[in-house]
Image (tube, rainbow, N blue to C red; front, side, top):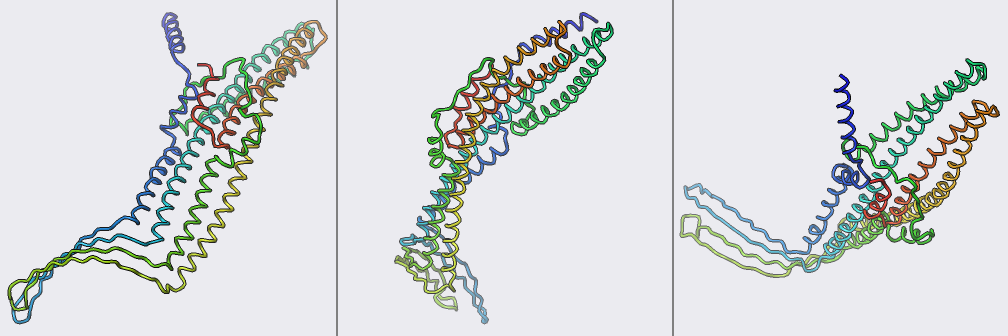
Length: 432
């Protein structure tokens, strides 16, 4: 039995050594393949590319073949069959509405590309956020469990000291209360970790493997440039939501011109070739077949359409005004996201630096309280408080690092400059 158990433990140890934690790049690759939101954006972009050939079709010729076969019966017993065939070609020469529709189709393709680029950036941010949320939940659980172990040791010490008469029952009660609280916090942390892992599973379509963690002793820095103004300028020009809304405004302007074309004349080049076959008369005379060719210019001048054209123009002008205001809203949102993310990075770096110093101080305070407890100048509650402060500081430090990294990605996304290379740079911060 012992040999079987030992073999199982050794086998598990070797499997653990051979297993490699999944890093951020691997999780992102899984998300690109399995995330339904990204797949939907990719399909929408593929559909958007078809707007260009559809718009161009209004400028190209149309070719059609029509015909008929008719059997006629006469009351006196005679009958005959007549057949007609016609091949017709029409080439627009002057159709202002069709030209504006073609220009709109090019803008629609560009808008579709901008929306897909936005979806790519959103995927990077969503994956990174879910990834570091899991690491943060794992850290919280680890620190709570470590705190629970430390409290357990302190509880056992308090019970021993009470038994020998060197401590009061109060120390035992305080340690027991802290232990019970740690148990409750452990359950909450386990639940939070399960929720965070489910959020990442929703993106990659499968339960995530163990994730690579940040390298110890990691040093974070401000993204370049380190000033806010260049990021704001980039957001106004390169943010994909802003670009998409700018294209939407131009499409709305073209829509006004397209609707005004309802008052304009149109000119088409028309050519046809027809063939007709029928009897010379209704009484069975010899069949007569004829062919004819025709080519010419066909024009049309609209005079009145019940004020429909004027109404559509007014509607298009109102929609242009709406698109202009929507553009201003999107631009302001982009600038606000830049400010928020930039401040998140800068304040995060300051928090990391302060918490690193606080971690050292908290460790020193814990060591001093343990020594003071041994010599009788500190009580049990002092050690428990020092332990809680140390583990809380470590938890906050880890979270500050994760938030700083994700805010850096959000900053580049708001500025419209986030690429997969930025994700690779973050991935290089992990333990491989």
